[in-house]
Structures are given as C-alpha cells and as structure tokens.
Length: 65
Image 1: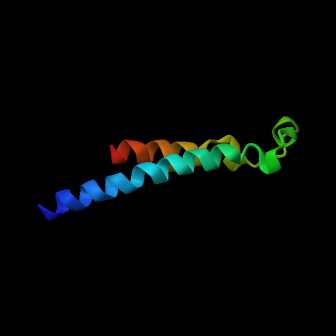
Image 2: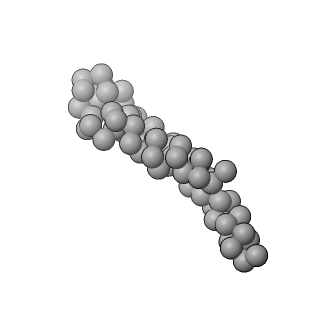
Image 3: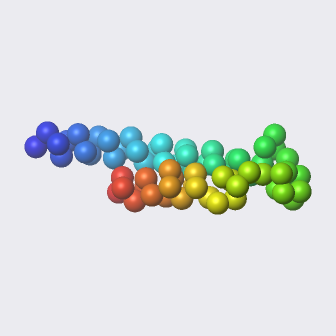
C-alpha cells in the first residue's frame, strides 16, 4: 500500500520536472536568445542529438504516466 502511494507522489513530481527539462533543452538551441548559433553550426553534438529532450524529457513523461 505504501509503495503505491509513494509511486503516485513521485509521478506527480516527475511530470513537471520532465516538462521543465524539455523546455530547457529546447532553449539550448537559442543561446542568449540568438538564432545565429544554430545557423552557423556552433552548437555541440549534445544539442543536435536531442539527448536532453528525448531521454530526460519524453522518456521521463512515459515513466511518470
């Protein structure tokens, strides 16, 4: 019984954190609010491979729901 209650509490906490992670990782494409970094290929491979969006955002939403 206690693990079900704890699991429900954790999933309620994971959903906003996953959404926050997606938003923050999207902002990596626009450092200092400028799009010139993306157009001139000055972004790192971490940003281009969508690791932050896919694994810490979308996968965490799947786990939480």
